[in-house]
Length: 314
Image (tube, rainbow, N blue to C red; front, side, top):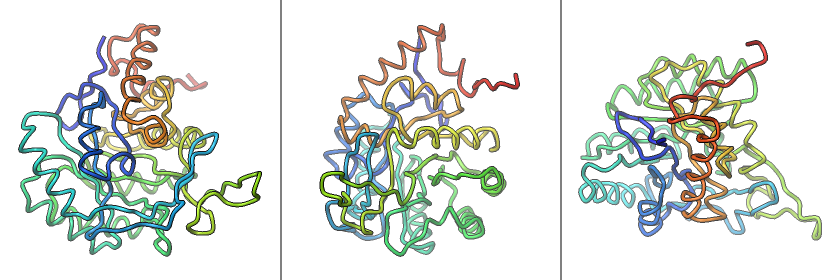
């Protein structure tokens, strides 16, 4: 039996990754991911220049997951590109690195993509269109016309492998509309979902919100979001061109959660909240748990069950 996963013409030891934003801010954190059992890893979503992010406290673990309003804290585009180029030079022939960008404007995204295009970077770029926690900045991917316009500009100049990270959608019409847009472009993958934006958690002892930014409003992650994440993975798996792969993100805490994301059609899997809680050792645990489930069901590879979710109409 194997957990190997083929993605971007490369075979990864397993489908697991960190979600961008978790345990990937600094070179030392990225090195810990590299030494872990994760099949691949991704850098922190970066902006052109360094950002301190929102005031603290801005992250809080809650019983069924997490709530955060980080505000895109990062060390700036050059910090992560320098790391990526050094990593590739030292690790030639290893799995590709994933590099995440999240510009504060369309112009910022295009500027960073142009610099990546003109660099020696050989990995996979992720364009994050779904940052729900920057005050005054709406999520671009909820504006379908603006998303189309940006992607049209992106692919007029960018020729390297590119995936996009999307927010959750909640209506079949929106799945249909976004898939129709994405199918017009040579995307490597779609990453679904980012956190469910603008939740609110109240501390029952103090009658107070638990994070400071935006009067306590923040993105939900963890167990709360798994059903929504599975629905989005399935919706896009059944609507996107087959060459556009799906990275499933949201509510993956154990092997069963991972199995369900794969069953819905995901090829790679990203872990956020639970990685934050457990650290990189989670990848040891969760790969073993997925292997046990596959063995119990008689599968020798992920390819045997990926996307084969049963419905009651069958």
